Each structure stands twice: as C-alpha cells, then as structure tokens.
Amino acid sequence: MPTQRTGRPLRIATWNINSVRLRRGLLAELVKALDPDVLCLQETKCPDELFPLEDIRGFGFPHIAHKGMKGYNGVAILSRLPFAVRDEDPDWCGRGDCRHLAVSLDAPGGPLELHDFYVPAGGDLPDRAANPKFAHKLDFVAEATAWSAARGARPRSVLVGDLNIAPLENDVWSHRQMLGVVSHTPVEVAALTGWMQAGAWHDALRHFVPPEEKLYTWWSYRARDWEASDRGRRLDHLWVSPDLAGALGRHAVLKPARGWPQASDHVPVMIELLL
Image (tube, rainbow, N blue to C red; front, top):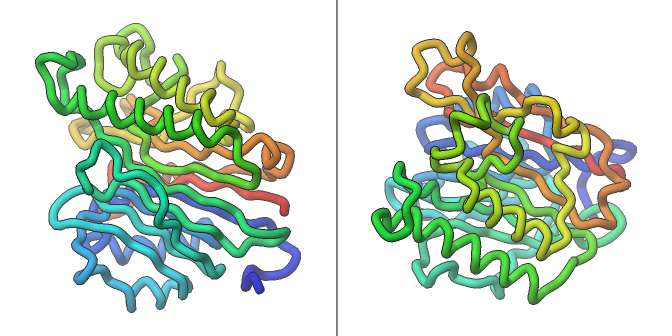
C-alpha cells in the first residue's frame, strides 16, 4: 500500500543537483522547503557504487533508484512511496549514458508511471554538422519523440527532468537575444514541442503560470550577480498525461535554492497532484 500521508496531495519534485555527493546536504534544505513525496534528480555525477544511499534514506526516502557514472550525467528517483523500476525503456542513442530512469509508482488511486530525464545540453554551437554535442541533443529528442509517438498518450503518467530546452518566449530572459543560443534555438524548440505533442503531454508548470509571464528554473554560474541580472531560462520541466491535468493542485519553483551555499545552477521545481 502507498505510504504517502493520508489527506495530502502527491508531491513530485525534480532537481538537477549537479553532483549528489557534493550537494547531498542541500537535500535537507529541499525537504524542509518542499516536503516532496518523490524527488527526481539529474546530473548526479556519481557511479552507482558510490551513491550516498544512507544519507538519502536519512532525509526520509526509503525507496531509491539510481543510474550513474563517474563525473557526469546520472539520474535518480527518491521516494517515500514504493515503486518498481521499469527496465523496458530504450538506451537512448545507444550510449548507455545514464540519462533516463523510470518507475511504476505505488500512488494513491493506482500505479503511476514516472519518467526522469536528463537531456544532453548540446554544447555552445547550434550547428549539427559542426558540433557533435548539438547533433546528439537533437538525435536524443528525436528518439524520445518517436518513442512517445509509438506509445501514445499513456494514462497516469508523469515526465520530469532537466530537458535543457526553454521552449516559450517567456521561458528565457530575452527571446530576441536567445534565438541563436543553444537551449532556445528554433530547431530545439520545435523538437521539444514535437516531443510534447507526440505523447500528448500537458505542461504542468505552464498550467499555473500563463505563457505571457516569465518563468525560469536556471541561472548561469557566469553571472556576477545572478539575482540582480535575473537572466534565467526554464530548462526544467514537469509534464503530465492528459488525464492528470485536472488533478494538478499547485506548483512551486524554489528560487531561493539558487542562493544556497554551493548551489546548483538549477533550482528544484515541484507539482502537487490531487489523486
């Protein structure tokens, strides 16, 4: 049976932690601020044998799945609710590079399919021919789109993660100035939009924040004062299947986390589902 506390929504959060071992202490701050039932991490940068299981169990997550490698990439799902790990999903681009983890969550009302993605960043040059990293990003999203199209809209499904694309004009600080910058180029925006449409996914953050309003989840380390300049991007996403759109209760973007000591350049984001 689900171990979620009776009478409260299901809280699902996502965070590119940018090294789970370096920032494991910040998980306590996240739990204090958001109190999630499920937390999906990206860029854990940790081989499986070194993943800090005991520390994370101490933060209230007895159920943990992780897929990692030394120095880069890596995803993890931390949960108060039991789950079964899915093992039938693709090895994206045949690289085995730990960018996707999925579980069937023992949620109120029945199993909930949860996917945690870390899409390639794509390097600095938005040119497929000249930049293999950008080509890899586009190929990854194309494979994910074909996968979603083949499966169709799946009921009781959630997809979260650092998708490394800010699709809407107000997902970046300046649409005009960002059109040639990797993460907001027209080809990337079209690719991510195609992925959403292929799976009939519903954008849970924009469910609450209208498209005409600015919405960011990432602020560069390069900014001398990230808060004053506020040149952000929405790179982190939470999507739900159409049948769950009506169950969305609220969202949270934990912007203060960007100012934590040794902060990630991404902040945690959460949705509540009234199941």
